[in-house]
Length: 327
Image (cartoon, rainbow, N blue to C red):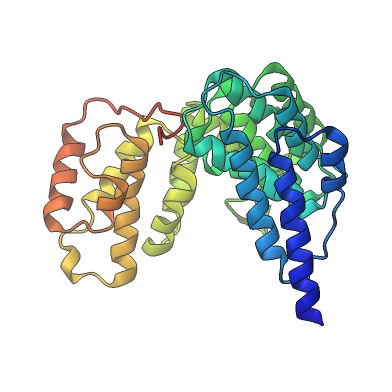
């Protein structure tokens, strides 16, 4: 009986979500779909939300070669991210939009419209969504530029920062060149258990300033990471922090780690993969790095020496300007 319930629930939901992509769909029909609520304990949720993300992508793909999103499709997108839907449906819909923006060459006006929808998450009553969506944008920062955020979206971010600054929000502000002025009491979370800890508002603020070229903040972040005596832990944090900071000082600092290891044949697995992480930061951030991201994973002594020589020869660093992939 339980299995029958799961199958029936899944079929009903898939049928309902399919109606979102119908070109003849009207708001009242979509609203009925958006009110479907399913318990998160049901195993069929895994399939339901995967389908939802796929349907969002398919919906957007209909306007792939146009300059703007059809008004009807825009209404449907706002409904599936609206507050009358299940929170998991909202979250999955937002992530579906993010993934779409990452994978397709989309005209600027359309990007702005979709990014505007993403910033609606900042008012979501669910704390996880409110924090996770800006963080997801920041993690994929190379796919977003300040000009993707229109005035309405920027004001939404400013207002959210004034209401309740959180690390993901501060990092999002740094991404679009809005550096918040935080009072001392709002920076306190930087200290944890009496020790300096790379988390909280204080660290996020240093990251945001470093992204925008503040020399003291860049130095502070590098020195904080260097203070960790465990090499493996130190390297493991590079990607998390440095992909957000496309600044020359970061690239020059990482040369030290290209030269640190003389022979990767003698390394243990952990150290080898830490070494690969450094190569991948270069590959993901620089236009003309001699290895691709995939090639970094199979790098040996020959490739290592080539990358060392290449790094030494650089007079300036050409950071990747592309916002998204062309596929």
